[in-house]
Length: 179
Image 1 (cartoon, rainbow, N blue to C red):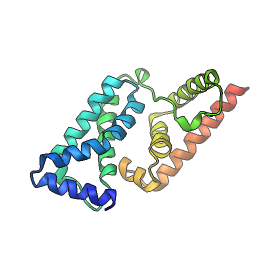
Image 2: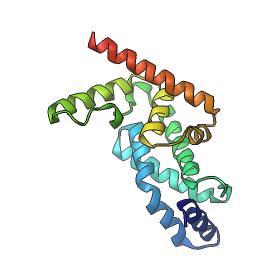
Image 3: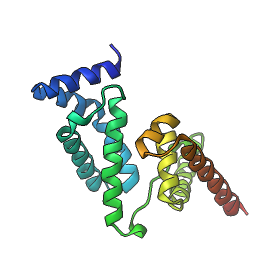
């Protein structure tokens, strides 16, 4: 049985009154949801609250889940919207996104890696939320372009443009720092 089939079966059981079925989904996806939210808000306490809020919203709206779509994409969208609402209530200068591990060369010494992670964090933090989010969903979460488009409610071409522009901005920023 595929994960998608297992998720659909758990949703059906949950809608049928099996309280343990949602616990299965929670156990399966809590780390991914927490990780996504944490990278967006950079505060573990806020991330924990937001992840919990996302799961509560998912549970309350489980009947609206389309079983033809992957459950994780639907859940990511709820977590995304919950986090974006939270970020909109905060002052923008108090919120940043941590480093994307793919931007840091793991072959460096420990000291160089710490410096590299700090630079990556600062560079990503300098991008607008639209570009940061696209990069995180693609490279950190490994979502396909189509999944990102569905999650963000934008055309696939817009996702490609955001990723391209984000990468170009990062290249420019790295070039400026090296000069």
